[in-house]
Length: 398
Image (cartoon, rainbow, N blue to C red):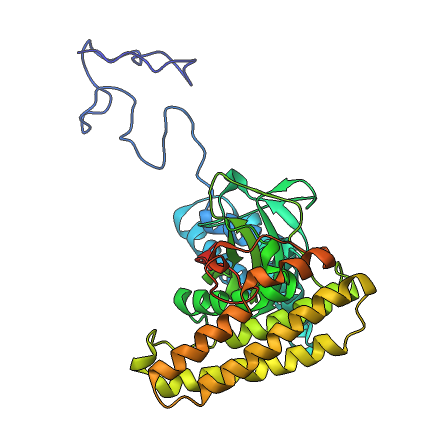
């Protein structure tokens, strides 16, 4: 069978060459009766050039970027050997990469000797933190909206908004963890949960002004951001309803309260702290010594805070309701002292109940109204669970 000539102009002569009998092949030792060679490096019907060596390209890129210069130098040397052996192109790239990588090696050596590498790495870590590694650089008192409105899962960015309007969360505190190796997700969550709940009262001192559907959330470092130096945990208030939001700031501290409000709330917090120290055993019969120790703490707190309120120079309009409140606190203190000295559970209960009634949260409403503070007790206090107490919620990690 005759083989047609290849497409395009023929290099020389005719096809087939003249002088051959019909059907004769000028290449009797080849399986193909035409002027073709088997496919190989020496011939291509499309005249394709030799490929460029991949290592030569890599060496050039690393040399230009001055990234891992020693690697770029080695790749250039290997590339030259491969090019010579395989007949590939890219010798200029390999040589150029080797030259620039050699310069990079020299500069790196100088940087190590002068401490420049440490400065560069510190700057890199700071930049990583500023760009979002440390919970987007949110500050205490700032409010923001989270993408999708959800304060759980992984967060990559937030939109800061004024606290006066609607927002998803309000930052009330932040702190840094210590340590070298990543402590694990559980340890970070435990630390965030413990400290954020402890810090919230310093920001929202008026617990009655915190809506019941508000709870504590936090941003924590990831394993990846920890490697870049991120140790910051950001504590925030958010709505427990995923579709809900907050309106207005919950901040009630020395920056927003007057002297009289601050004095009253500090006293209330002192009593709350003692009330929160109740033993784990719910029934007195199960731990009478523990309950007596608790009663002693409450008695001492009532004495201290009553003296503080009595000694503060309240405005005339506030002085009268505060004095009435202090009188009840002093009577309650005596009952708690008797409970602390009780020899049996029944005696403890008798004085405990009297002491609790004298500091019923509802008794503070008149004083709060005069001070301009919130006057609706949180649900947990409507049953008389403690003075100026607050509801509890579940912290959720972001």
